[in-house]
Amino acid sequence: MKISTKGRYALRLLLDLAENQGDGFVALKDIAARQDISKKYLEQIVAILNNPEILRTNRGFQGGYRLAKEPKDYTVGDILRITEGGLAPVSCLDSSPNLCPRAESCKTLPVWEGLNKVINEYLDSITLQDIIDANNENSKYDYVI
Image 1: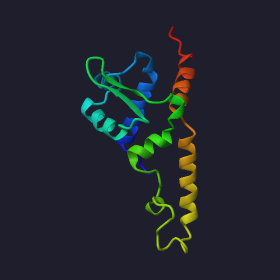
Image 2: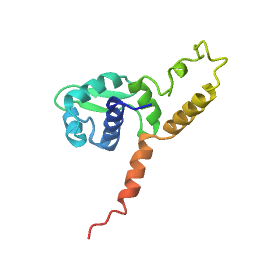
Image 3: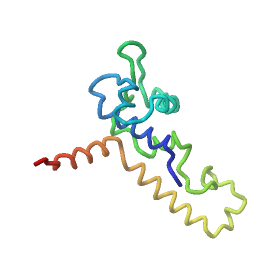
Image 4: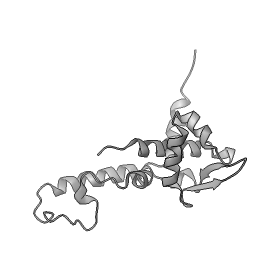
């Protein structure tokens, strides 16, 4: 499994909004500049994330985007599932129940199910707030002499 730039950039976009949510609505051009991602590409990602449960939008002079919920309520797993369409390491695990005609006799299926479980549990255990906190924890020991 490989996470696309769309998934990675969506995570960075939402993380940027989480870090700057005290500023109210954040303009996409500001996020693009901070994250070094083209505004045009961010517009494509916002279109995927444009859901009232994920983003709030405001048009006009002070327009922009902000998170619909607290950073602790967004998991990396949820963000990647929205942008990537799923996290299954093999296609037969994309649907539940498993529709593969070989599922009953597949000797390797338990390997893929185990990997799928580990991937999902790990990514669902990390929130935007966890990432912010980890970065703040690391930066408090950042001394310049």
